[in-house]
Image 1: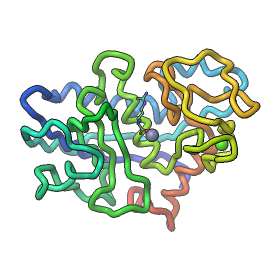
Image 2: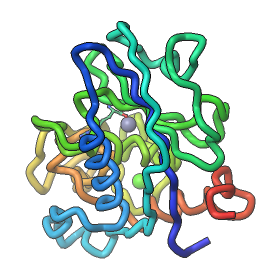
Image 3: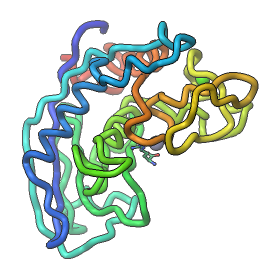
Length: 237
Ligand code: ARG
Ligand code: ZN
Ligand code: CA
């Protein structure tokens, strides 16, 4: 399937007394996802010539369907999905075959967010974003791109360095091989494994303001999920 895709979003917010998440913050995150997945990130004009023809438009629109809120005194939820279970004090997922579930809570341990790849258990399908990095906030990770990166994983994308050295791929042909993550805001060119790294890809580890593209082959890999035999085909039926 090639055309526009609409992904309804359920935002599950677990707040404690210090970390409230406003409706405005939630709406700002939806807006950022819509920019980034429709090639409307203003920084896209900075893509170096070498990569300009590889910039993809995912043509995916995210719509806010529901906000669920719960208060909890817990301030470090970890990365083992406790926030996705009401039994564990979290919020159960809403119909993960028709909604992208985003949990917003204090993950702890300096972790910005994490995601479940397609193919995993339905009850935990979705992404988790730490409160301070959700939507428009402040600082180097305050532009809502943690969610863009995590939704990239939810759409079957690996980190561009393939989570290994120069011999490990991300299963995407047009992202150059790299040996590891890039951080902060790298100068172009940044060379690794004999080629220029695509440091501005959403699936690297740079600052929010320094990531501004997905590639054509990343898009193709993600799109396969929406084919009739794909793991996320229920979103287009
Ligand atoms: N470390 C996280 C992950 O691997 C998210 C990194 C997000 N980066 C950013 N600039 N917001 O999923
Ligand atoms: Zn990641
Ligand atoms: Ca690659």
